[in-house]
Image (tube, rainbow, N blue to C red; front, side, top):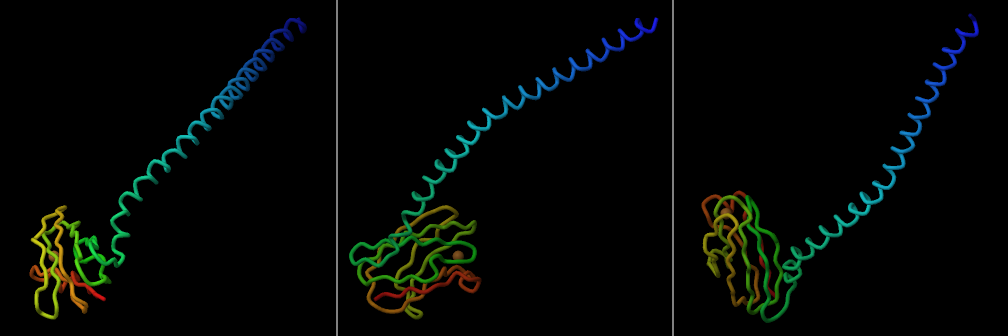
Length: 163
Ligand SMILES: [Cu+2]
């Protein structure tokens, strides 16, 4: 009788071992599956920043034009609540084009003042609009403002130095 009792117990242990081995096998299989998928994931992760890295240089290209060149200088100006960027503009005298973009939500304009005298003025730009104005600038120190009521006081003011 004792022998008969032992046999089912051993059979039960065998089943347990079989289950354990199956579980280990599944774990090994699971690990085996996760490692190859990690490699494609890492590969796509490296390609994604490369794709986004190509976008910023295109957006940055207008910025280098801010350098002072004689003859056909173009300066990108961005209006916002409540700033004019660049706040300080240095440029060589002569024909200067200001490409003014309103990145804010409210209407804005871009005005170049010599003291209180208006030298040049863009049209009033709505959200997202761009206006390019070309000005023949003599050497001197100018003020840039948005002349809509209260906007200068809120921070939409800058300087323009022409050499
Ligand atoms: Cu404004």
